[in-house]
Length: 217
Ligand code: GSH
Image 1 (cartoon, helix red, strand yellow):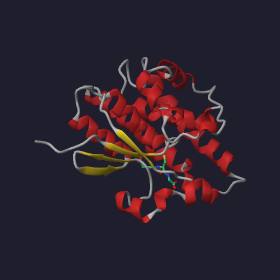
Image 2: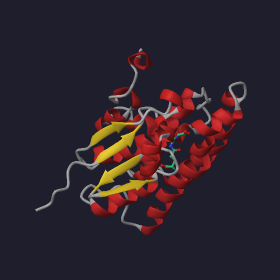
Image 3: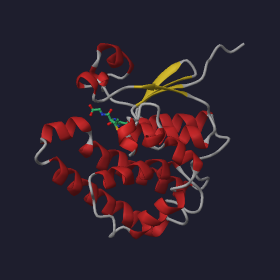
């Protein structure tokens, strides 16, 4: 008999990388518990000795699942896809799969790391907004170009894929840093199609147990 309990997601409410995984868990209807890790409190719980044992990169998310603890959001998404294929988030067609992966990579490697908390602290309070706007705009310009040939209702065709799990949190971050999104009509169209989707809404930062009440006002 299996003694495996519910998966536990180490997550921070406003973390776009945690949000990617929350969306996929919701879309696949996998029940999970959240263990909040505050990236702020006391200089950041991600830097504690206890959390460093979970993720030596001192970042969220981490997912405890099937008696293993996994780190790196794209790796986690892929594991979920391989072990829980019942609600696929990758297309069957190899070219479309490659399109999904390239959008995920551009966001996960080319945009998000440059707006990460450790990086913004290093850049400094004075320059951080301009810095984040510059790199997010540059990255979304590439994403818009990719979507102009791949998107239907969603990032790649008319089925929700892992690319959408990565894009929606990145749009939230763009808005947070007051990036002008008007040059990105395809990105905005995909966003509109997903803004009221229950799996995305439930994963939204404002609906997380560790979201501070003042953030939703
Ligand atoms: N490549 C990692 C992934 O995709 O999981 C990046 C994870 C990451 O950057 N997480 C951010 C974090 O924990 C939140 S979205 N930052 C902590 C810090 O900057 O101190």
